[in-house]
Length: 96
Image (cartoon, rainbow, N blue to C red; front, side, top):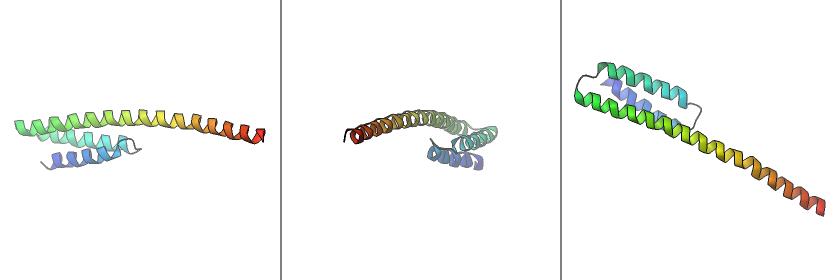
């Protein structure tokens, strides 16, 4: 029971870490505690709870992948926009 609560705590931390540099380490810890809790689960209800937690872990990993892709797309657009703005400013200065 204590291990499942620890795993749940790490899943909460993992949800907060989506998109951050600490995501990988937090995912590792959440996975570790889920595996430990799974080793001690015996009843169908315990197994069902842990199965749901594994699904949550997988969903958080997918959310992190999507967040990083979105961030990458956003950042790549910023440099192009800044370059275009600088070009407009230089043209305005040269035209004066």
